[in-house]
Length: 110
Ligand code: SF4
Ligand code: SF4
Image (cartoon, rainbow, N blue to C red):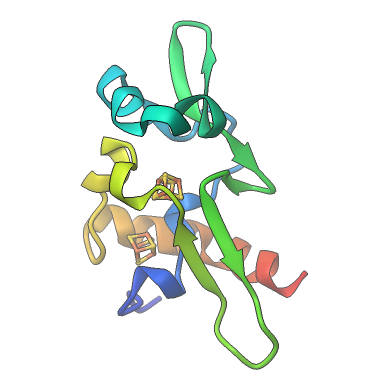
């Protein structure tokens, strides 16, 4: 799959079936500030972004008939480091697209 020119039209790397997909470090938790308890949670010793409907809770998905879906991270400026490190067009991004793009397409058709 070709890399999208804008992550707002993709959102694939924010999807996962795992409840412990996005690790939230101590620094991440501090950066999240007042949002931390709402968007993240502890599982044992470690914290993770909360997941809902197969994607990170912070991902807002907007679908309108006849338009491309929009994927918006509501905490973009304070998102965890692991999200900051995943660059569009990188091998990790390509891997995400390869394995999960079909799942996101299905999600948006529902
Ligand atoms: S980084 Fe890659 S997989 Fe993630 S939203 Fe952007 S284009 Fe999609
Ligand atoms: S914090 Fe934002 S960028 Fe990271 S997985 Fe969640 S929605 Fe995606």
